[in-house]
Each structure stands twice: as C-alpha cells, then as structure tokens.
Length: 377
Image 1 (cartoon, one colour):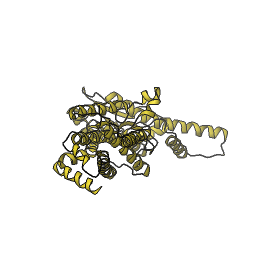
Image 2 (cartoon, one colour):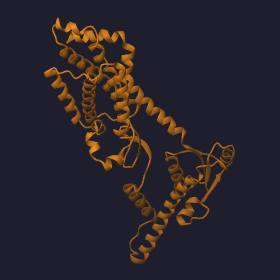
Image 3 (cartoon, one colour):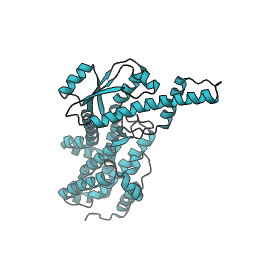
Image 4 (tube, one colour):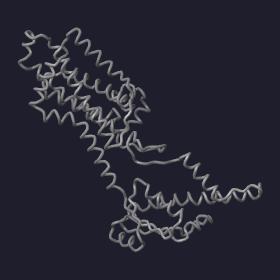
C-alpha cells in the first residue's frame, strides 16, 4: 500500500495545482455562493426612513418590528432628514410615529397615528405601508381586546382584578407561542432558526454535495488516463494485479477526499455557523464513499476524456434540477413521494447515515473486483 501512496503522490506532485483546486473546490464554491447571496440580499433590501417623535414602549416595539423585517433597511432619522432623502430618492419612503402614539393605541383610537412621505419613485410604498398598518392594527386589536375583557370582568366578576398590562402581557405570550405566521428569508437548516416558517434560499450542504460530485467526477479521470497509458502491459510483471492497483488508488483518493470533507465541516462551522453533529459526520462519510465509488464505476464506462467530462457536467446539471439540493422541488415530491426514495442526495440532506445507493455502488465494485469483468463500453 505504501508503494501505491508514494506512486500517487509522485503523480500529484506534477499536477498539484489542479488537484488542490478540485479538492478545495466544494469548500470555495459553497462559501462564495453563500457570501454572494448574502451581499445580494443585503443590497436588495428596500431603504425606508422611520421618524419616532415619542419615547414609549409601543413606539419602540413598532420601530423594532420594522427593523427586524428581512426585506427592509430602516434608517432612524429626523423628519427633515427623511424628507430630504426622499426628495433625493435615497429612500423609498418614510413613516413618522407621531407624538401621543401609545396613548391613542391604549385608548383604542386609530386616527392619525402615523404620517408617511413618498415620492413618484416610491415603488414599494404600498406594501410597506400595509405592513406597517398591520403592526399598528395588531397593537390596537390587543388594546381593544384588553378593554373588552376588563369591561366583562367588571360586569360578571367585579371581585376579580386583572390589570390592563397583565392582559397585554398574556396576549403577547400567546402570540409568541402560537406564531400564526412568521415568514423570513433564511438558509435551509439554519442553526439560528426557531419555530418560524422560513423560506429556503440555499441548502449549504446541498450546494456542497453538488460541487463535491463535480470535483469527484473530474478527479476520477485518472482511471481513463492510466488505463490508456503504456503501463497496462507491465502489470503482468509486477506483484499486484491491475484490479488491486486501481482499488488501492481508489482508497487513496477516498482518504484524501475525506480529509478535505472534514476541512469543509470546520470551515462551514466557523464561517457559516453550521452545527457539527455525529449525524452530519456520518452522513458525509456515507455520501463520500457513495460518490467516490460511483465516479469510479462511471469512469470505467468511458474511453475518451472529453466524452466523460461532458457527461459529468450533464449529470451534475441533472442533479441540480431534480435532486432538490439547490432548486426546491417540494411540489414535485409532494406529488411523487417516490422521488425522495430514489434521490441519491436525500440522505445527506436529511443527515442520515443510511444510503441505499451506497449499497448499490459497493455491490457493483465488489462484483467487478471479484469477477474481473470489464465495464468499459
């Protein structure tokens, strides 16, 4: 085995730049995609101005709710600054929380709570206004419900005393527990996600899986290069057979891939806040063995490198479309649940160790090694 490792290292030394690039490609490509997405999301936020004319809990709550929106970039300004920025089209629109906002809310009044400014280029003014109104109506609805409960309490059980603040606090508690609708943009399996119904943008490990398949396929071209070289006749005079040679080289490549896979886990944990778990590690090991043996078998089906490369890119594009690793296919899988069972990437996406496709590839490799049948077409 040591002779195989030394021979392979000598080969890698001649092409170390290309090999190092493709070994690191899944990490680099995934991190770049995530970072670019973050930048695009940040730049695509709608800039608005918020003017707060009173210092109260409800006013601060409304301002915080607008700042928490993933679609908005909120600037807290004075009224004159907001108007100037709208005139210069730096802001889409601006909203003023008038003085006496909390007092009117607690009284159940809904008149002249807010003032807004817009320009002829305020394309998002209407949906933002509706969002703001929904938050205000939420607060006024709580206040109205609290007044109704207090009135019923005084007429039915006057001896029972429940304060207005206690009713509002209980309402907020129930709202937080029920979480009727909370939609935000986030990453699939985001560690910061709680009970919200998140809109999936990218699955980090799905991206990594696609890029890993591509790099594995392209690095597996060594089988065709060495099978077509002048070393084939020499196996009749050396101490191990051609099958033993390629199987041991497969083990060397697998060990190298696993080393960079563990590096991926560390990098994603540090840069993308991915959680490291035993389930994840097991799923990655299983997935790595599967795609390495699958690429090993696939390389035997081709004699010409350019045909193999073309097929590899077509296969990756096919997986991008139908695997659900990058593009969502929830509607398709809901209609055809069998797609989840035959999806080779699904065990990794679910972070499970069991992968039926791994059994298939290992079985074919075992048959090839035991019987020595030629798989090349």
